[in-house]
Amino acid sequence: MKKVSLYLAVLFTFVLFMASCDREDYFEGEGDYNGLNDDWGDEPANDGGEGNDHGHQGGESDFVILTTYSISGNQITKIKDYDVAQQFQFDQDDVGKHQKMWDYYASLIPLENRGYITEFVVFHGEGNLAGYVEPIDENDLSKWRMGLAIDVTGDLDNRDIKEEFAYVAIHEFAHVLTLNSSQVDVGGSEGNCANFHTGEGCSKSNSYINAFFELGWKDIYDEFRALGESDLHDFYQKYSDRFVTDYAASNPGEDIAEVFSVFVTQDNAPSGNSIADKKINLMYNYPELVSLRNEIRNDPTLREIQPGSWVKTGRKQRVFNKKFF
Image 1 (cartoon, helix red, strand yellow):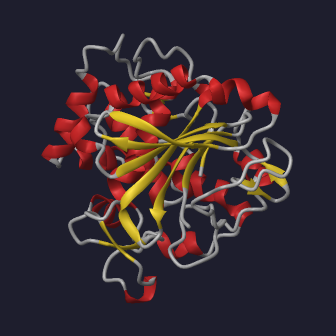
Image 2 (spheres, rainbow, N blue to C red):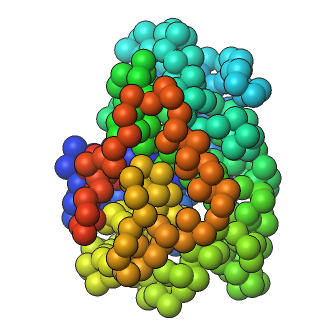
């Protein structure tokens, strides 16, 4: 089952990134750009740390699922709590904070744009994971599960677009926005797709990610596919003018999520002529995305809107020194 996730790191460099991710099948599989290829069951099992099967990779527990909720409009209803170790019991029992996390997300992303996300997962990221999304059924891209980490929430009483939790929510939403069933036909293989194969399926001709791929990836994609893990840093350095952040060079899916996040959080459209600037400006060609951006930015509950420290004029920076998958 495909998953798209946002990971945390204390210090981010591509050297550290490659060293920590050597257990991922990162470059394997047709069109598999998500980087996380483990099969998850719909009923993940927790043991609260060591041996946690959900999100468990390479013999190490990356995060601990606490509670899953179903979503109906602006409301969430608990589906189940998972068995967790005592150290995570307080966070699991803090249903008031779970509700605040959902309310934060629901106030940030307009209701009419949230329909594809039908399950909400609260988990403890253990310093590794901040958020993820995945199709509930890998053969159906109309229903998605979104997980947000309770340990990276920060101040939930204020909606501040330059804060980490807001960025996590926007980035993860961007994956669903660009990979849902209106954008991608599930299944198929790269060889029989007329357009970009996302890993989940063939992108539609008029999809955001296909236009994005044609603009900034098509001419370098064969080179990217031939990379070894240790080559990704050099790939970014070679094409740094194409990417809004260094991690955006990881694959087209993370790239478009990063671009959408910058598109929403940065005050003004870029005036430069780099491909990175053109990717952001491509978003402005879609009236519905401009409208969505304005709705998010004009939410009266936002304390302030600033571009955030991760975007600086003329220079691409990492987001919160975190890494994404």
